Length: 534
Image (cartoon, rainbow, N blue to C red; front, side, top):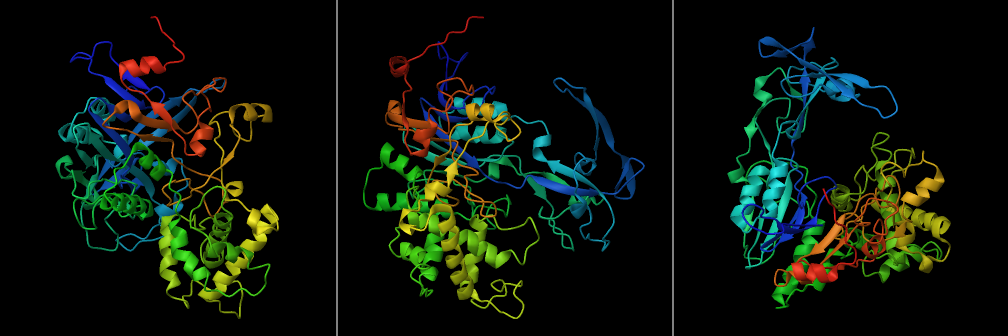
């Protein structure tokens, strides 16, 4: 959507176009006449659990006790009675153990060596304090240069985001904003880095304020000639303020960076079409790691080795029409089950994300690791090669049942489908006639986790898409009217609108639409007009 003042001046400075949220003022991602920007999740650690020793409504703080804050909240229910809940709050945040089963957290070993004792659990979260994120978005809409983006970074409290930007006068940059807690470094039995519940009665474990926005990571016109932000670590370990240890492992950012670096080294000019193609890149880094090992395994049976034969000629691109991609996904899912299901608690099976790719990559060099052994087979000691063999055989049989006997006819898109569901009217409890009306028909897609075309799927559940790009845009800073865009489904949230899901098919196919920006181009492109009179 666009936000354009009839007369753009100091009193009404907005002339901006891009993507926003229903009911939110301003454009969240997009461009104005001077600057374009994108956002990805920074993933900073901005929450902590605090264990509280509470007695008679008072929490221990050092050598004293202080009263909890208590308030009543009323939830209005349409067609039903009001629901009143009591919220108790410590100095660190609301007591979530009143409403959520967190016994495992509350019974964690503590610095005093006490275990098995029930504590209250409070949640400290930067988003629970008033912030200025809405101001940050409006400031972004009028930003012109790196200095303006730095000002946005000082306002954008939550959620913590990576801001990448480029200007029409030829600059590119990066800014990490966010309200990031500062934690004391405490040597003891309880880690103090935010990975473990913290003793709420010990003030040494309290947050010590927030990271100074002036020292947050940033870059302007790096020598590489490009900036990539795909949820990876934005600084090397130990450099700059502590943000988190729980980063994405960087396979997408590595692929994007390597493709751009190759084009720059070859002296190629990068076009809008080139960047659009890169956003839809489906090269599979899982295959780079695992396929060479799978091809070492001997499979004698000519039926059972059909899947392995697909891998021999595979270009390692997980496109929707790839038979090899379907087989490889089944092998990966089965491999995780065979390797870890016997060792992990129920409900904690691997989801197959980049963390698990790193785990498996490390294990491949250790053929006798106890992780390979299947503890459900007493008397047998399985190793790496046996599990890889079983994973391929089992995957072949599984896909035979799901997709048919002819391995050459398998297709990744038949397993891996995107199926948007209306958040209110699209669930299983709603009558089928309504669901069919509000839920677009599923579409088979390529891509996957840690792939640039990030259509994630959960290996512990199945192959269906669980997350994906909500939008794609490419901004041409030399000719803003030549930019392109696409939404996941459509621009309207009304199921009866022709624009409710008219972009779903093009999105799945990696297509985009022209994105006029100037007043003349926008007027010429308009098809429908709606004028609201107060």
